[in-house]
Length: 410
Image (tube, rainbow, N blue to C red):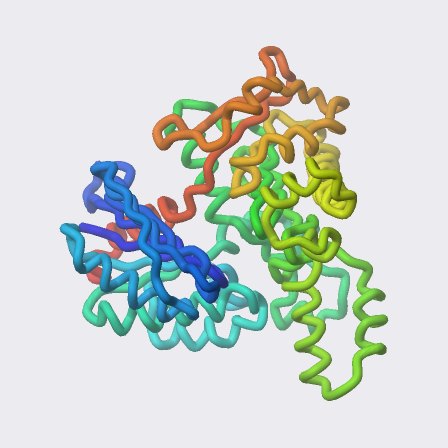
């Protein structure tokens, strides 16, 4: 069977098509196509598709919204010599307090996801738009949702609970954690490249959104993001952890209705803060690095604040785990920016981190099949690895498992 995986963001959609085997000896899904629509809503969106044969196309399109982009994507897929999907999977960041497992999409699930969209206002509404378009285009195909929060359900209560009145905790207000599919893909790749899972490990998923997760024996025991994907370390447009009093200060300044105050605060926390607020530049680390090279002090400060916050998170989890056996970098920045990795690690010498500068500079995007790249020096007590985030593969694997355990879903 063939599984189409969609990973929608606010201005992009990642797409993959996998050949999946349903049998007791089923192996890893085989990627037939992967690609992305970038720049949705900008003057020049582009559809990039790469097939298993190696052929790659970059097609300018006109798409101001995610539904527009998806309709163009489906039309383009129909023109290619590819099999039609037998299942469609979606990455959904936050399922809310009542959903605890990846599952097939039903009208009831859609209602729950709609109610949960306030938990992840940058992500869930876009995912719901994508699901509705997908259901319309493939009405007779089973559709599945996979959630970032599921991986973090192994956190102990002392890591997930908030010290607030029970009336709020009973409503499902607690630390959920995100980038779970990315973390899970790291474990999968380590396992399938023959490497032992380090007992004490942190995974730094660094991209537009960033989080650091602490793992014991491959299971999440703590993470920096909380109730929503807004908290934790500093990010591209999000501030990470803040003094709650700052929000009260901002609310007291705000004029207008409660709805207007909430909208202004949501925009502040999700779109106007982080590195873009400190640098005054677009949300792009490459642009920040170029600005630093030309002497831009604001860009340098933004990057210093960002990398310091990641270092603090890793250091805190090293204390929690009583040492570290491995640090893993993943996500767009984690995989592609050697300077960020070096700056984050530069203050972790006491943990026994010895970086191989040449390896760090040359490993930018490992090829599939050789996905785990080690950038620590020989003899480093703490291994440092670069592993690509393969959320789409994990979604295909989860769909494979769901359809094997319940063939009536096919």
